[in-house]
Picture 1 (cartoon, rainbow, N blue to C red):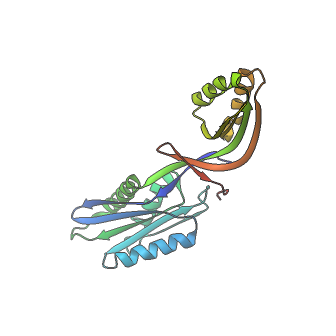
Picture 2 (tube, one colour):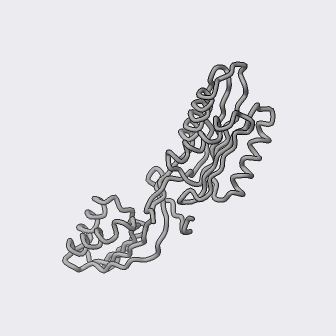
Picture 3 (spheres, rainbow, N blue to C red):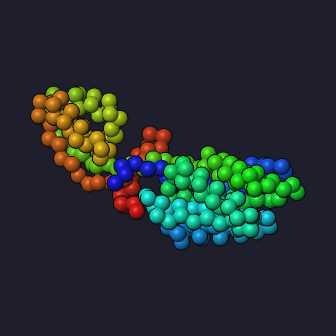
Length: 221
């Protein structure tokens, strides 16, 4: 099982101009195919007067659902290149619609592929793409002699502290990437000469945005 993957957290809109044709890429986080189709329909209604509304989306941790549409552009010049950008960037649970207003000049097959790909890249640039990580809540109980060493180890490994309680002893709850759990446990045990009590808890998925911890308790597909 992958311990980390990229996903769309907040959508965005980007725009490019190619030979007077206007390409507007609208990016949206989606969790299901139904959400993706509803988003596509909404954008098509918003840009009802456009020449084309081409689409692509991918859903699932292993890209189990991946769809695209050229919406009247020559076959393979729009939807597939758009989807290839999403798959190439390995971004999950995301849909994108590229709306085209024809500017009067034909772009040719290669020009269309480049334009639709570039539009998606611009849309992704305007969206918020985060890394979702597989983690475990680790309860740490220690005396005051061991807390300094524990804080140092956690800081060195950039481990987030969810909760802390200081009484006659110290209790912490840390959010540890699953693939670091064994290494971190060994380091804390050695660093405190075995005085720290470590208790792994619930498994979760999480992301960091500007230092803020975003928790996702569900197991994503």
